[in-house]
Image (cartoon, rainbow over all chains, first blue to last red; front, side, top):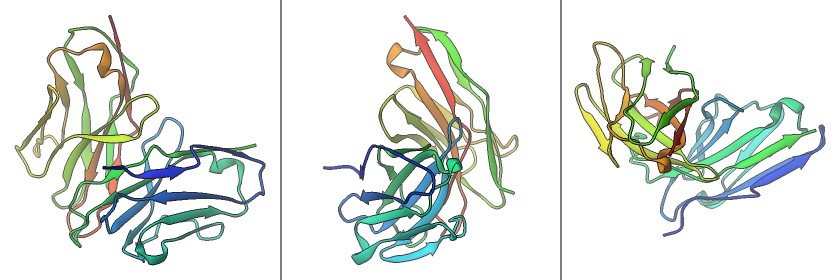
Amino acid sequence: EAGVVQSPRYKIIEKKQPVAFWCNPISGHNTLYWYRQNLGQGPELLIRYENEEAVDDSQLPKDRFSAERLKGVDSTLKIQPAELGDSAVYLCASSLGDGRGNTEAFFGQGTRLTVV
Amino acid sequence: GNSVTQMEGPVTLSEEAFLTINCTYTATGYPSLFWYVQYPGEGLQLLLKATKADDKGSNKGFEATYRKETTSFHLEKGSVQVSDSAVYFCALRLGGNTGKLIFGQGTTLQVKP
């Protein structure tokens, strides 16, 4: 069974440029998460989807970050414009979802973003 | 607020040594507790979990006990191997329907032959 797939694995961009990350969750998983992991830190939740609905986006910096999950499957996270401080690993995770967030989350390998 | 604190690394051990990585948490309500592991070049993997006080999670020779009285969830292994070298993250998940994981900062383990 394929795990959570993210692309690209690595991305280097200049500041003020836009960037997008893509995530394909495990088949059948209706809950999808985007986390950001700064160097030497643990991941922090940016947004959580239940199917196509963003049910928790309180940590998403909405001035420059946006996300979508059309049709409740794949998801895209976008930054526009990117800033130096956005350099981090962006992790996608998915879970079956019991409506209460109590099922195991499976993580992708992440996208390492470097903003120069 | 809700948070997780882990011992700082890196932790360097010789093969077959005993491992302890300390983890303490602050949370409202009754969280579930987790240990995730990140091997070089790979994504986070769930190592073990415990969902209520006094539960012991175990996997691959690792174990951790949910101690409500000390708000701790220390990771232990009796005899580490070189292949255990990785970054270990302690995390909590609040009760209710958030599904949100709150992670510690991670502890790097290096096991030398």
